[in-house]
Amino acid sequence: MHLTGVKFAEGKYLSPDTFYTLCRSRRLSVNDFELAQDGTTERKLLVLPGIVRTSNLAANMIGDYYDRKPTLITEKLAGNIRGCIGIVYDSSRKNYAPNTVLKLDMRLSIQNKQRIIATYKKHKTAEQYVELIYKAKKINWSKIRFPEQYGYIPIPDC
Image (cartoon, rainbow, N blue to C red; front, side, top):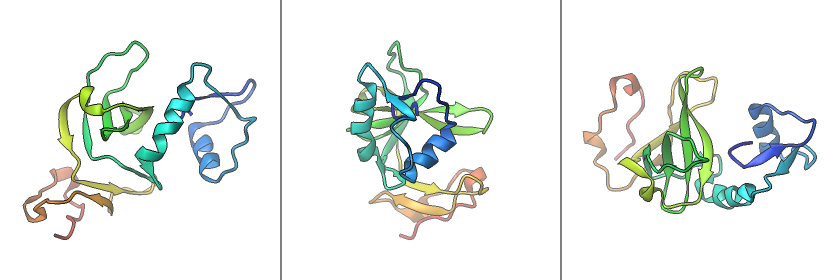
């Protein structure tokens, strides 16, 4: 819900997983939530389609967030020059999770910028990432070596 900027309707509570499942299945009722009064919801919903295409993140860069805004707490940004998703480390799950969506040229708000050369996905109950969903162009894949803990990931075909 935070990712979209919506708030719980009075007397309602949905877990993040339930909210997401209802969204994806188009069974979320307008009675389940309210739009944020400050316009946040509308701004985030304008950006989401350009960042999340189908069920995958459309990002070609990632970096450490350093631009300090009083109402934004996030660690990394992943996206492109039109918008991005902020992510924070979830210590209970031992991975990064999205916590916000921003309409900005993320190059102006990050340091340690890195190009994303490949993106893989897995089901949340799966142990390993194996399905390639994005690969960058103009990469000599024969020279790519993943860190040891990700050595199982298949290198894309050249």
